[in-house]
Length: 110
Image 1 (cartoon, rainbow, N blue to C red):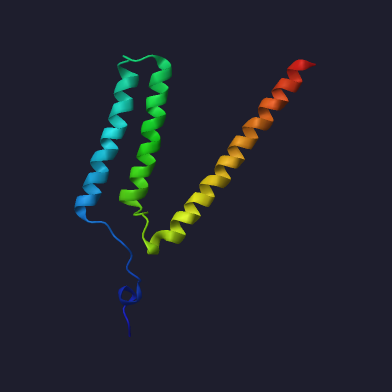
Image 2: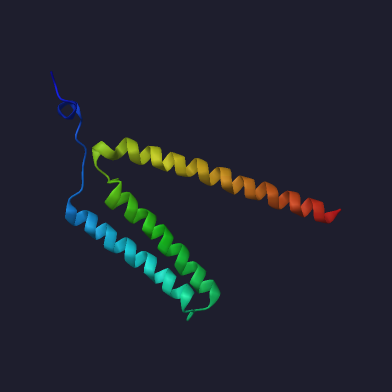
């Protein structure tokens, strides 16, 4: 009888080195915005821009180093599913905000 581990399809698992690189990058990408907020040295608009940029970069780091999403053939379906989900969420949130903004404008005009 086959063991459950024998029938498991092995995916692209990262090495300890890649997990450590991802971990260190995540710590750095968290420490920079934390430091900017705790010890304000930049204008508020620039601080917000840096925090958002670090958040986007950190999402990419997590996708690459922890979820192992890359350009390989094996990951193509995962990447396209992720991109479609991101598009749907962006549309849902963006259009909801647009509707609420327009409703607010219409309510204030009366």
